[in-house]
Image 1 (cartoon, rainbow, N blue to C red):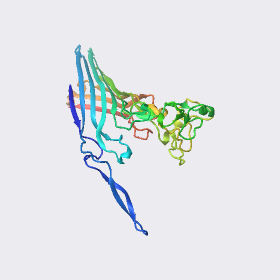
Image 2: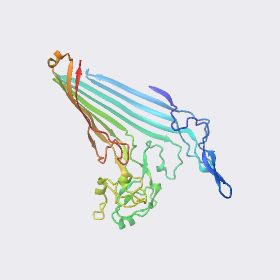
Image 3: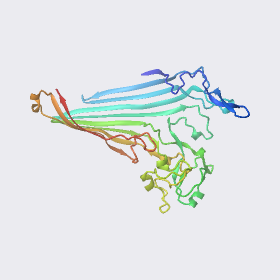
Image 4: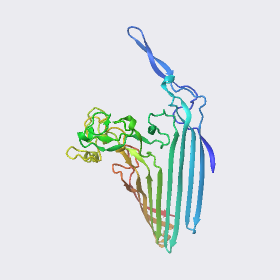
Length: 383
């Protein structure tokens, strides 16, 4: 199938984007003594009479296949081209005299991927088995975002993932003053042994903002999948369902990870894992999991980089249930059709390389309410 759709949910408060926006601005003071300051009005976002909704061309190709009366396979390939995405026009230089950019329909983006599911069921005498699984892979790419052309082409975010983080490439930690002297100069304040060593991407002998590149995946998983199995035998039933994600990254940070984020002394608030696995003068491990700690803000170690990028891939036992349906002669005289005792658990186990907190949390410091483990014991009675 192929079709074109529109989207008028442009976000923000720019419902009337064709009108210019007015805002409060610096005023003027009247009088030589006892001055009175009267506020002024200035133009905010200029109006755009040509603004419209965005459009998207969607293409789908699907396959549904049934085999042997007990196997069902469904697969779908999708490809979407979004045009006229509502964005701020940032390529206009300030010399034009427009201090606040205009909203325009210039953004372009591509999404493509695969969605598949499988279900299998079979009986072996009194044993009944059902297995199922689903898989979704989606890769997006920014085709045009109207950002100013960077000096170094590798810093452009076109043809990269949406919301991909920009940062430096970490090469471990400095071991000694000699190690610092033999490395390209890092332009983020004073550097000491135990600080993060970064890669000089453009080879100019300095590590600065021009060495920032796109790092990791997006915080939105490209891969989502799930699988489960259900069995039943002589009144006993068991079901398990797993959920997982892949190709997902997130930056960790904040005072709980990197220490103070200003020159104001902040004591405490550091995760024990960070304190225990940091670089230490008496154990100068260049591959330590965390850089040296400091009482004040460390500009060098506070840079966005792969050092703080974490793989948030996980596989979780989302649901497990064990039940027993009692024989009908136990309750038939009571007028019941069915009586089933069950035990259920939700979010029982999570398998992930990331151990500090729940990898499903959309936070960089873990300060958010996690997924809860839930245990239920109950009886289902059908009249």
